[in-house]
Image 1: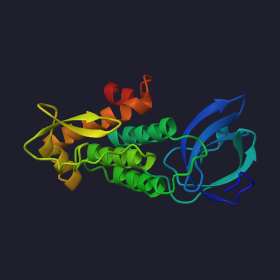
Image 2: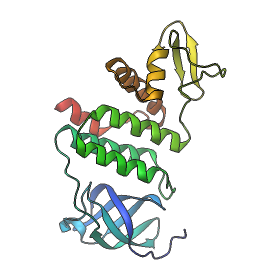
Image 3: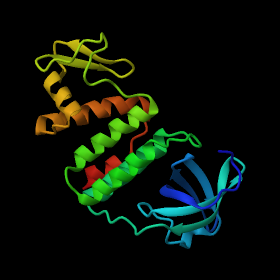
Image 4: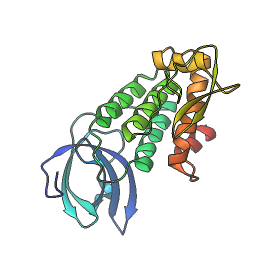
Length: 223
């Protein structure tokens, strides 16, 4: 899609920051455009420009970023509170940090909306995050095969594996238990599996996030 004036289209706001006296620079996520940056003239007082509020936006190309010409709610704001709210900020920060601007991710759009809906429900929040992280990595081309090692051999429940983030799982004398990896693959989220999934996803994300810490993780530690 060329960067010309668009009709109203669905969007989510991922991040906002002040710009000049009364304006904003916002990071938006759209199904056909991916993550885009946009300037909102005089937008600081607009209550619709908030995370977790489904939006319809009108964008116009303006240099390296867009100009937000119109914005209206397309559905009620999702009600996230407590840890679910921090999880929502974490998901938004991952998209802001990992997605390149103007790089469409149409398959990621439904996963993002499903993730927010699951956070509203409030059950097994860590599992919701792991499923999002795995789906995000796969969509970016950095996913790994949980069912096979880098030699193509099936993962065995009685073996251990180390992670090579660029290639996948390598059989080893210690590391991630094969039984936990297979449980992740099959959606069997027992306590041990959830701990393994957290460690594995962090290791997979680390090369792409770099040394700059995630602000949303600080919120979890402060709470």
